[in-house]
Length: 464
Ligand code: GAP
Image 1: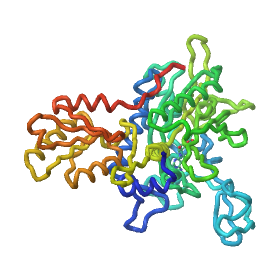
Image 2: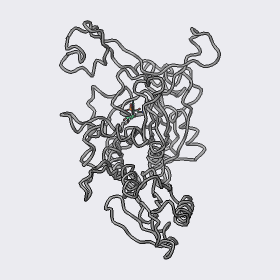
Image 3: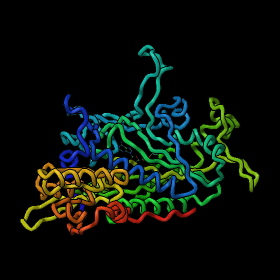
């Protein structure tokens, strides 16, 4: 049973230290969230799983970490300055402002009127100023990146030449992006500051681009499966021609059932786009337009590629899987949510996170906290496990309460140390999902847990 709605996750996330509303001591900041002790671990585990899967387990992908603030010309030639717009309209009756594409049945969601101003573009790149300059100095204008992708394109040649890469190959990057969203909301689903995991896969202009989009869709469906997201809660949306971004010839969005309680439950989890050779050619000094004029007179580099076998020079095409860390975390939490009733009729929340994503892998719980030998042994076990996996020690409640706490945050194993442990050098290992218990020798504990902590199966890396 996944979570019935996002609100259930908001409440769990706040109660148990995953996500807090940001700037609460000053009344908050709309749609900004801070990740707490467990949230930061969960986000890190998602990002590590993605990085391991693409950069380590495959042989055709490199990683980069580019600046958040890039030369403003990057955003001029990428098309973002001209086209990265939301269309705004105002209700003439109640003066509320909305995104034009989100209005249903032409009715104002605030007052129900249908009296609108003309739609006008609003550029959603967040602006800042570089250096100690006057407020109105236009040369100081810079943007916080709205996608990590451009930092990859402008480094294409650096990576390709230093790593001596031949097509096809990809470049992956994970990091923060910023958009001045007109209507942020729904918890961490749409925020102005968020994190992306993007990969640009460079291929020949004659490759089968349509099929490559399908290939990456399949790969990501399997990866989401390995994170514990059920295929039943994912849906593929072929973006119609009229809705494609200015750089795309084909985009498939993987949608997640974020709103199971609604008639239209789907919202985008990620997109896989065929970006053609748009980005590499638009940043290149040698590309000419139809009239023979340079399309980019500001660039000092040419980001073309020389293909040795065919002796041809061209701008590679790009297939781009672009995923959000925050939306992945929300989907993972919703899918992992479950409830179970114990013998006493008490209903408990169990977060059935994939072991690789669980913020804490093992909790060491002493059965008698006033018995120094037991406490000492439990703390020593915690310390001995720490180099191998994330473990915590907890003696702040009765054993039932401690188990319930760990179930609610998704800890796969609780390890209890009791009087008998002092005699037989063994502990009880309790499984989060089955509540079954097993007696294990302390000397074998690390190996035993590591074996059982194996991630859900990850997709076998396949070459394209
Ligand atoms: N480089 C292509 C690109 O940025 P996108 O569909 O605009 O494509 C990719 O963004 C992913 O980034 C989205 O599918 C979503 O997961 C995440 N994302 C985009 N805007 C977001 C926002 N305001 N809040 C949270 N995540 C967002």
